[in-house]
Amino acid sequence: MYYQTLLQRFGPQHWWPARSRLEVIVGAVLTQNTSWRNVEKAIARLRQEGLLQHRPLLNASLPALESCIRPAGYYRQKARVIKEFVTYLERRFGGSLRRLFRLPMMECRTQLLSLKGFGPETVDSVLLYAGGYAVFVSDAYTRRILSRHHRLPRDADYAETQAIIHRNLEPDRALYNEFHALFVTTAKTYCHLRNPNCAECPLEPDLPPLNERLYPASAKALPREIDRQVQRGEPE
Ligand code: SF4
Image (cartoon, rainbow, N blue to C red; front, side, top):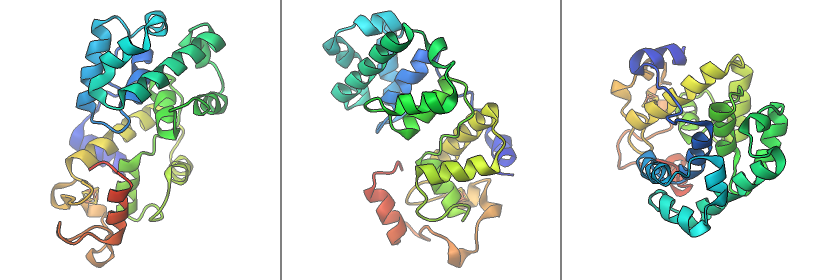
């Protein structure tokens, strides 16, 4: 039900906004703890320097890479993560993403999770949007929306959210692709961390009764729930 409602309101989101699978992977690393606008600046610089291809990226010096991705923040750390990925790709698969993504999904997921800087959300974004595997990216926005609608336990973590979604949706990569993108758009447009705009949100008809809601009636009253989310550094 949510899917059709959101699709009707926002239309297809055309994710992931990238020209190649390597660009998806680099973007998934760069987007950690920063806005997409900053990622775009970093991607534009990488493109300008010809560093969105495997071999040039592998051969690039760390300072050159750091300089390109500086707009995305944490650039030293992220440059090392990107370098570790391309080095792994070279050693294990001769630089071929096609060979990497021939692995069964769980094996590919386990291998990527073993790389420094590749947490579950980054890995699942890579698997879904670069690898074409049917895995749901259950990010903070998704958890926020579903928990506010009592579709998840209050403190469901990434893995628990993903397991619930996987139990309730067909394993369909096109559906997962679009649905995740629609959740992100919904959260950014209406379901803000502190002050959700339910009155204009297309999911409003599915809200629990007023006295059972998890978010504040006014921006001044932050319940403990949201306080914790703010402290965890969840996106606005
Ligand atoms: S803004 Fe309100 S109605 Fe929309 S998803 Fe968030 S909690 Fe639900």
